[in-house]
Length: 357
Image (cartoon, rainbow, N blue to C red; front, side):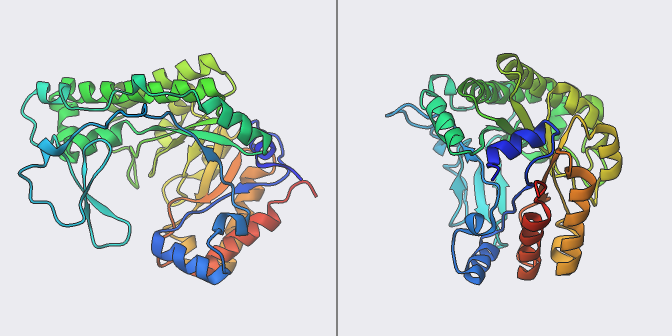
């Protein structure tokens, strides 16, 4: 019986794995109904889901996170609002798992306001526990990853969506200041994880819409890609075997070659409604592992259970028999997804994805 670690290594090395790795996540309401339907809260274990171990550096004992209260002292925020780890207010939206963002620097009037914004300095955080956790997980046949972070997404959440887009064009030094500060923290996390021996770095930024990039390719290259490349190449110089997992929704077809050149090994979620998967696989299938491919705008919510089975078999046959595929829906499953479709997804992945028979 192949372990997850053995299957993962074969998959990303484009060798035939013993079985296809697969997973899916649900919004809380749907997750509750799935658990009730199968009679256990251990959905991952019940369905044999690919479940990597996540590890991270830790804040030193006794150290306190930044105090963002000054940014919200005079704000009338609704009950239930939470301030996250970078000072962004998350308002309840009343619509399932979605939240409304209120950005602490949305009204900033100077570069100094961005320079002095209290992002936590993680240089003093510790990763001394991480190598042991990696060895322990590997001994159990499990894969280990580490969340590095966002860059663009965190920047606009702190600054405000429209203000940050305008900064990139009209006040690039403001945008670059915030991106540089975030990239520095991402580098700290990524290097610590790489030195500990994790299997992949978990990164991402939603930089595309349904049709194309949300800004010009040149702006993306100068603002985002240049900083991500530095992080990824630094880590690959430390450990050439480490893999980079990158997420962006939407149509990222135009930037896939540059993502690969910069260091991306696994691309997620590859929405079939947005990209031509056959074309991407033909061009990059030997250099890139697909993670995703099962549509959450089409097949999972609106197809039948048979449609789900057909689609899972199709992607395995097209993209996964010689490695290079992890099967997953292209987003968290929303409440309208039928339970029969979820069961069909997992059952087909488990049975049709056995390649060592």
